[in-house]
Figure (cartoon, rainbow, N blue to C red):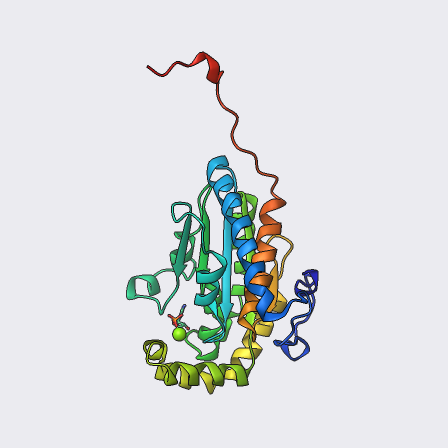
Length: 267
Ligand code: AMP
Ligand code: MG
């Protein structure tokens, strides 16, 4: 899975990254179901260990164009984890109160505490993406944010947060198919938004904004992963695999029992 990471400082051109790729899994879609189930089963005890040890904090950031699969990842990769230790924070259009503060204010409040895993469905990156594309603040303001974001994430990392950032990479054709599928299926129509059609017109601008964000905020303490996401099954396997490996690398241990259990009598 190393191929989906890149060195800090690398200039990202998304045209060089194939959204259809399935190179790290030979089995294809049919076999992917079992593989994902296995990952789900590995994730569950790791998350329990995270919760029990109460030492590390885990932050998973999901970004991607509309329909890129952020909701799908949350549903499928995190299936089976204990809701007590996992939380999803979704970042929508800011409220007036949020807008009255700096852009990291609402984000910092949602970051994980000890033993907790938090999944960001969108994040502070919107403040260099949609905000940049639609010029919601002047360039002089959003330009500073790459550095600010790196420093913010550095604080979180220094204070014990494992940060993983996933960019779900789909192409314009795949977005068309997914939007059409939402229209065609009465069970999915609720997800269709005319606003998404408007945003689709800005695809080249979003691509440029993502390329700059990926290029300038890929750090050793908060790395980006560019996930080929045209195939949903592959996207889930990539993220699940990387997450399980990252949690294993924390070498977590159950807290030692304080005392000798044999000396305790339960009346
Ligand atoms: P969804 O993820 O489909 O629920 O949509 C949430 C919407 O909120 C997207 O269109 C985002 O671009 C938008 N959004 C999230 N954060 C911001 C922000 N900081 N400023 C403006 N729009 C935002
Ligand atoms: Mg949407």
